[in-house]
Length: 394
Image (cartoon, rainbow, N blue to C red; front, side):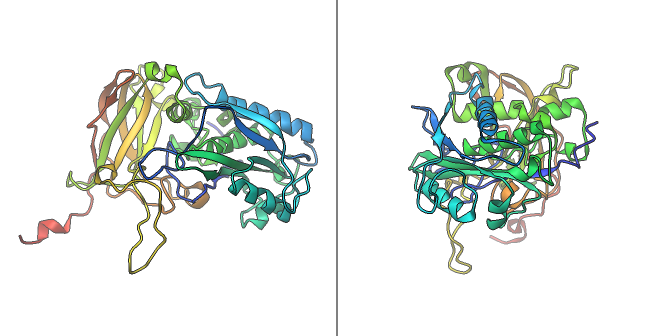
């Protein structure tokens, strides 16, 4: 059992350029349902703070660690994504250069990021910047996300690292801290949170821990610094190398209410490989929430919420899931998003939607050859409320 889970269960936040996030895959999608991603025509350029991370971690040490963290994602063999440190954060407005250590300086740098001019990695030595942003400096290790995008590509993003967790009153180990920031680099790269092996919130064994994503909303263990099957699958799906098509296939289907007709949004779907006696089902799973292509927020003349420009309005995208998996045989299971995963740690969108009814037995086996999409793997929930239609006349 993993005994330290409760002690280091720190939230890891994603902050996207419009606040609409998805689950187990892309952080944000365009109006055509395609994800926002960085261009891979050249390395993604980022700039680091020219000051210490904390009272015990110098600038040079922090810089070396940041480069190594980016390399974790760059080293995925089935993904084609690369990063380059372009130097220190450029002076702009109230920030004259050097160490970004006041809220005013951070605001200037962040605004420059929103304008698409640079992608800063900021060291918040004492958590004061995080406090100024209205976040809890005692529980948020860091946050990240894209800042600006064109019609199709992310062009800038930022990462903020809370130095309180390195030598300060909320200190955790260097390995735990780095695992958290590797998670934030996932957001920077366009990935959302992922929910797999949620039972690890109460402590879990080594196989379950191996399947716990780096992109899980909470830091439970330093081992999350190593990418899980889910992390590798999704970074490869967003930035496919040529080998992706020869190693992966896709499982697709729709989650439905008990009537077998109404589509259910934001139900967590997990594809688990068939177990051959080595607990592959726990250690090598991949997930996605249903309906992540579909537009979550609609304007209307009564409550008049701001409409979202993200996602499609195609009826066929409601409740749809598409999960990239290594070629093999799988079962599908569904579950509700955990109620703790809300706001900056959300999975599926700005509003938490509990799964209606209860989960059926796992669906499968689903045999997935490389380079193919195996569709029609619908999941019908049990005991959901009846539709009004059945009580109405013609």
